[in-house]
Length: 79
Picture 1 (cartoon, rainbow, N blue to C red):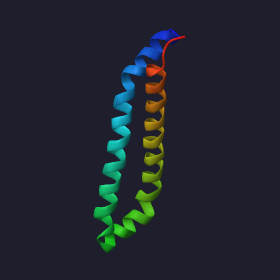
Picture 2: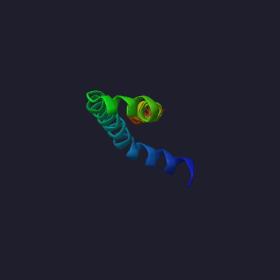
Picture 3: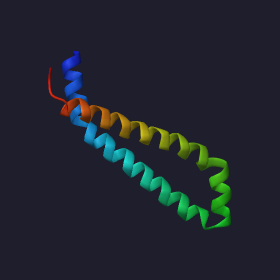
Picture 4: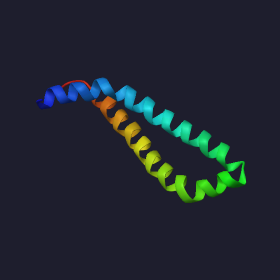
């Protein structure tokens, strides 16, 4: 796969990557809110899910940033 094809593929995938990142963050926020209401949920949150969710949120933010960068590349006029 040469560079041009790869760029075309990433431009096609960019909107989905952005949507996926936003959905990840919303789902993580909802799960944390639900688990935070119960005492058992709070202990589960502290030990297992907080580190995992922070990693997933970093990936979500990165996918949004990459999608925005690719969209800018797509919108900029060709030289």
